[in-house]
Length: 423
View (cartoon, rainbow, N blue to C red):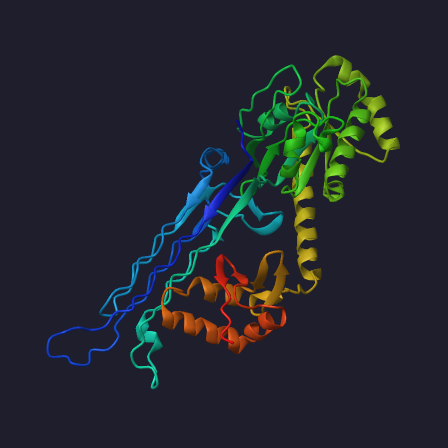
């Protein structure tokens, strides 16, 4: 089965803990602290692999965790950095998390980190000062990111063949390229997109995608084509394929056009040559003049083709070349007219906020949550250092203002503390 969507869980590795050790060597009376830093946890990333065509492997294996970094050690030994977990995906894969866009990998080799590993904790050598020369604490490793992500494959093709079921799209693809898609006399023979390479001239090639047929209601989930509408988004040119043997080819196309519009109105604004297939059938050939007049009355112009006899293919190749040139001009103009993008950052990345919960108080803010995660609360010096951080940032005062007193539960990220009032 062609898998173009997958939902997986990814987790970066935690950073290794820093070391709180001291030199202990013969004849070295004042060895001092020599604890090394912890190693970084591994990242989880996706990489576009030209050899991949489906997300089936990720649908079968849904959980991916990177290893944690190694702990620091004495003699300033740095913990080992953990290896990354690399997930191969097809080019054209879009990554989202809870409906938020994370990124996409388009060209082979492009990489996107989807879960960062945590930084290693600092050893006690970093906390030596003129007033505190024997620090007995070190930082814990930072937790890695973890989340559920959704992967969606949108095929990258220059040209997409769209039309009703049994319109002759697969046969046309086979006539234009060396592809050998499954062809049948019944509707819905195509149950997955097929790709082929079209030779426009000695130096120019174009990738063509044959998309499953669309029926009325496809954008709402009816038929087979609805799941593949997203693949039309990646194409630069669409080819409207009308079944010349249908009872009313124009009405069939209007239904397909309505589904394309319902999915994305911009699709019909792309360069779109139109063809009427099966001209080798006598009845279709006889009806062609009347159909041509009906199309003209509707403001449409089509190329009569027969994939079996090869007629009209030369004209179609020329039309595709012109359409691709027009798509390139539009893309260039759009890039030149693209407005300046403003990037907005979450104010809690550097700031903080205290909110009341039913059974305590919660401190929010990436900086303070990271600091709490890296604090060893079993170590008195580490606790004191974290308390000074709360006081320096003004969080301690805000907690007291909101009613924190002895026994109040205070949550900071995944850390849950019990407030101890010294008064």
